[in-house]
Amino acid sequence: MPHQKVYFVTGANRGLGLAFVTQLSADSSNIVYGTARDLASADALKKLAASHPNFTPLEADVVKPETIKSAADVVAKEHGYVDVLIANAGIAETFTPIKDISLDELSRHWEVNAKGAVITYQAIRPLVVKSQEKKIIFISSAAGSVTGFFYLPNAGYGSSKAALNYIIRSISGESKDEGVKVLALHPGLVATDMGKRGIAAVDISSMNITVFTPEESAKAMIEQIEKFDETDKFLNLDGTTALW
Ligand SMILES: NC(=O)c1ccc[n+]([C@@H]2O[C@H](COP(=O)([O-])OP(=O)(O)OC[C@H]3O[C@@H](n4cnc5c(N)ncnc54)[C@H](OP(=O)(O)O)[C@@H]3O)[C@@H](O)[C@H]2O)c1
View (cartoon, rainbow, N blue to C red):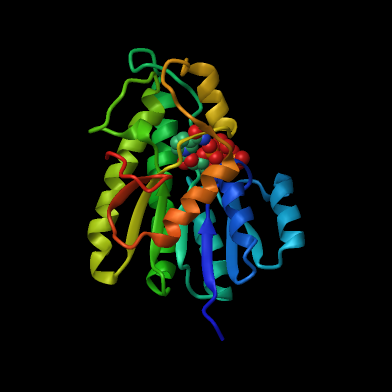
């Protein structure tokens, strides 16, 4: 029997996550799991599962380790491995400069975008190690770049993605001996709920930035995910190098 590639995507009920699981499930040889914080209201995922038997929605909140662990247990029982983890869940709730940001706002972004990625990794890692592909993908952002820094008033989000980038590089380092390949991706500016909120908050008219649909961005990122073969990389959706 040919190898069945198993994907696990967090934050799959809308935006880029939904585009990922929709496109990955379109290939019936893939096995796809996608998480939502509230499965009862995740209508798009229920619809996808009804038409695609290779897709399974699971409930998980990346800041609640026990929920990700329960989702991992389901996959462990059904398949025993995850070829490709796509740690996609994230928030950008506010666009505030550091001088004004509340500590709660700061903590919340760090909690979901940085700590949530660690919680996800710790729970799914044992399944990735057991797989053929052994790929871990983090959806990061150019907004978290330190070496390619450009000013935006997004203290909570930007700093959380900078922390995520450190975490990603650290995971690359600790995983090399096991053959696990780690990739950070910048999806571009994408017209999801998050992206639209950003566009409304920050004047991008002088920046000459393309705005992608979630479908366009996910398609391009899936191409990068399929073809990358070297760990510890940070790429744009067209495969060019992004700056850490
Ligand atoms: N859109 C852009 O322009 C852009 C640019 C650069 C990077 N990114 C990154 O791309 C990723 C996806 O963003 P998006 O644009 O698709 O955003 P989005 O439309 O706002 O969707 C975010 C997803 O993350 C989930 N999520 C939020 N907090 C969570 C938690 N604690 N546990 C589990 N899931 C949680 C949301 O679930 P709920 O529905 O339950 O809230 C939702 O499914 C993020 O990591 C983001 O930082 C986006």
